[in-house]
Image 1 (cartoon, rainbow, N blue to C red):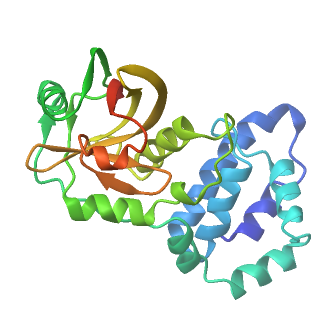
Image 2 (cartoon, rainbow, N blue to C red; image 1 turned 30 degrees about the vertical axis):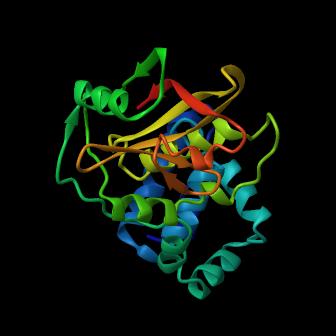
Length: 243
């Protein structure tokens, strides 16, 4: 079965049966993509644009396809035949593998960070897992090279430092690497002993028990105590770490 045949099978859905059908359609789309790589890209688009709580309503799907200019089943079939969806999806949403040669527990992670960063006395940690895999330097660079986060537009308040840092962590998790040792962190910035601002960025733990900071807006990797990157501040102290 292809997407055209699948859509035809959902024509005339009884409104009282719509929720069950929406769940079923979401499942059918995934099975279609798994079985036929030609349809992977359009299914990927549909899931991100139309899926709600694990459901895809047929009417919403048809409306979305129309916004792409695919107003008839023939348009959809022609488009899929022209586009190599498998290759296009790999460019837009690349897959990759990371080395998992070592693993650290929560207490080890905490100690590594405390030993290597300037921290507030009230430093607060939050962990969602119990074990984390450290990055090799090569793998961390690979993740940042493939991540789209640094290409997004900075908008004061609406999409600023905390959003970039949260999105990098979420993006890596969406790739199946939610327990790699990458954290969202917040720091206070000081000048002459006076707190003059705050910032959000990322921290990664590397193999060899080494911690590094990552500026997700530029993909710059640097040592947590490297004052040359601080600009006008004397020091920045970590106040919050979330894995």
